[in-house]
Structures are given as C-alpha cells and as structure tokens.
Image (tube, rainbow, N blue to C red; front, side, top):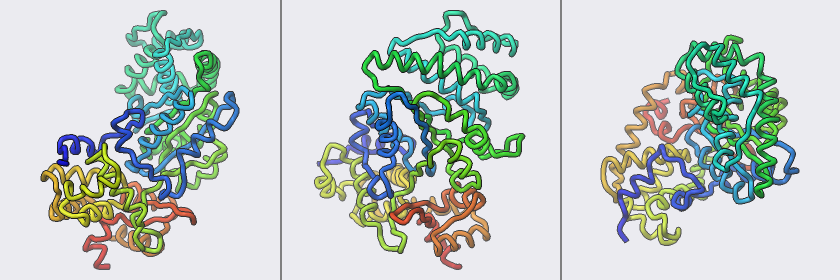
Length: 435
C-alpha cells in the first residue's frame, strides 16, 4: 500500500483543527485522555448532562496554545449534539480584537452567535430592548449603520461590531455607551434571547442550549486603565457577569490565570475549578520514557498517513512514512507531547522531502526549531530552565510569562498532580548542556 502524499501533507497542516463532526477528521482523532491525567472533556460533558435541564452551568477550560483545546472542545460539541443538545461553538477571535476586549464585547458576540445559530433552525424572535439599543447606538456613534426595523438580530449586532472592530475610536465610544447598560444587556440576553430560544429548542426535541466560547484564552495579557491585566479584569473583576448567562456555557481562559494570585478569586467568581489540558507525556516525572504517551503520539502521526487502516496495519507501514521506526520515535519524543509542535515539525519535514522521511531531514528540522527558540533566551532564563529541569515545578505569574507562554517549558499531569519540564528541543541546546 503506497502513501497518498498529497492527502498526508494536507492532514499534517499544523493550523488545521480537527472537527469531530466531520467523518474524515474523526479518522485522524486520537484520544489522549488516559495519559493526560484525567478525562477532562468527559468532566465538562457530565457537568452539563447530569444536572437538571433547566439549571445553567458555567465552566472554564484552559491549556497551552496548540495543545489541542479546540479539537477537544469540538469533540465536546459533537458528543453533546449526540445527546440532543443544541451547541453553539464559535472562535471569539473572529469577532473580537484580542488585544482589546471588554465584557460587553463578549456578551454581544455570544448574543450574535446564538442568534445566528438559531436562525438556521428557523427560530427567530424580536427583542424590544435590543431594537431600541441598536437605534440608540447608531444615533450615539453618529455613523451610518443600516439597521432597518426588520434587520435580523444577529445581522444587526454583526453590523455594529464590524463597524467598531477596526476603529479604536468608535470602539471606545461604544463601550462608554454600553458599560452602564451591561446589566440591562445581560437581562435582555437572558429573557429575550436565551429563555425563548430554549423553549423553542425543547419543542424541537432538544434537551437544552450549550454555548462554547473558544479562543478567549488568546486575549493579550496587557494592562487595563484600572492597572489590572486584561485576563484578570475580564474573568476575575467581571467574571460574575460572565457567569450569569441562563444556559450552559464553556469559556476558554488564559493559562496565565492558573499561575496568578487571583486564581482563588477566579474560582469564587465562577464556583468551579478551571480544567487544564496538559501535554502528552513523552517522559514521566522520574525521567523514564512515557511509553503510553509516545505510543499514542506515534499512532496520531500514522493515522494522518493511513486514516482508513487499523493501528496494527499502520504499524506495519511505518517505513512508508519514515526511513525507520526510530525516526518516527525521535520526532515524537522531541515534540514534548505538544500536538501542534509535533505537527509543525512533521509538516516542515514533508515540505523538505517526500516520504519516507529520513532521520537526517528530521534532525535538520529539529535544529532549525532549536535555533528559533534559543535566539530569544537570556542567560537568566537559561538558569530558570535548569531549575525547572531539576525541580519539575513553576511558581508564580512571572515564571509563566517567561517560560510557559514562550513554550520553553511544558506542563504535564499525573496522579500526583501537575509537573513541568523543559521543552525537549531546548534540552539538547549547547547553552543548556554547558551549564
């Protein structure tokens, strides 16, 4: 059986997010929950499905960018839809400027996406509050926004947000106008959008409404005028309002909040612990090889090459993709269990040569990646990396900003909780080995 190189190349695109509702994408999916220290998606799902259908829930989900959060959330969407929930999933970065987000931006984005999703089911409604608000906004901004009385709800919000997204001046003016009306907006969303929507959905045989807001973990860690970082302002200072939507909601949040002194207040605001999606362990806490994690990573790579085959058959075809099984193992080990990083390294290899990929090609790509990372590391940061390698711990927001946000260090979980280790690419750098 020969490898379909073009199909393999497309399947390894690191920017591609697997959509589990898509039959072809489902073939590529590998469940890593057994080696990640917990069945996080199952926990999110059970929280939604095991409560009273009319009791809203709000949950928080985070992890390294590129560790597979979006794929897991789309898996959650597919599983909940199978259990007759109507699920609205959207990437907030498509609606919001991640460098400058406010609470009303998030609320309007949710209202827009829910409204648009319901309209596909021919569920339409009129909101007196929002009709008046839209007219007032147009007059207040003194700008041309075509908002006729019969304009569809989601389209009206879209016209307003599109007009202001690319204009900091208009966006600032809109926020000044909306801020004192936040409570009214929340009440209108709950009473004039979510409440009638759930009634209509149940009439169509649905159990309830779930909103999954992805990519909020990407909001910049910039400082607000209140001298609070943007993540703290949104999820701690204003978290109570995000927690007041009368449906099931899952928010992604910035990983930095897990290392922040505000974590306790965050948990109090939402009444739940954030769920953290860690890396797949290629090594265990004691330094030994993480055999189960390595096996699943290798299976993921081979599934991209031969999605139609069983695992046993794929194992027999490794030399169709790599010059030897050792080359595949080397690639998975040096990824550190970071899924997007593994896909990026593999993609670069395929860009350089056709399979079977040689060990020489893989090592060349690894050296390139190492050089990219080491250029940004200072002498003091190398010292911190040595401490992490020895102690397997990280404490505080500053360490997060230096080591984790830059992907110098990865987080893993086992039965004893969290532990950290240096990115394997850096562990082989001469600057690290020389110390």
